[in-house]
Length: 256
Image 1 (cartoon, rainbow, N blue to C red):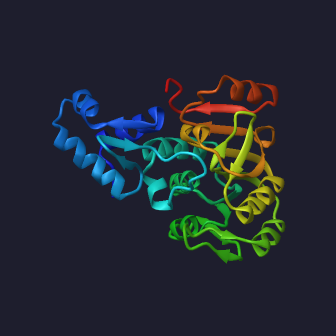
Image 2 (cartoon, helix red, strand yellow):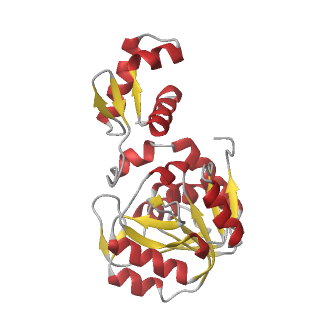
């Protein structure tokens, strides 16, 4: 299901404020409360929001939002991030793309490129890019996660270590205020660490919502990143970390 522009804005408001209320949204958008209730019901059915009396909450904390829900969250922002990342990758490059809805947006934006070698542990990326004869797709072996089509485990780590590529495009589940890059699945983290270690230039792609989440497993730190692309960085401390470590910070919507 594609979200309407109003539903997308409702999700953004819920993400920023923690919750939204029907009456306030009806006044803001100049529509009836019934219209807003329908929007919220749709979003709650997708589990993007959690229903409460008179409104809805945005999921917080260590809750790993289901994959189809994550596709719907900040979809436009992810598309812009994907296009920006693709613009940095020249034809004829080799690259890793790991698991995530934002990295999938990068894969989608690469379809006009030529003479690429894309090595991925993301079945969704492989399935999309295999349709384009100018792109060679190499897929890692390992354990396939039912939740998102990610390939994880020691076999995937060993496979990744066979390569040394021009670029790595990685996503994360959360970015801590101290610059730590975090995820939920230890097996996925091991693959991401191997990807970072075997690329000449590492591009982190993440929507700004990742600054407000937490996750228990450490992938690495922003200082290991060369280019960080996001719709907006609300944290001055993160900006300082990027500046101190020569990380290029690219914001597609810097005024968020």
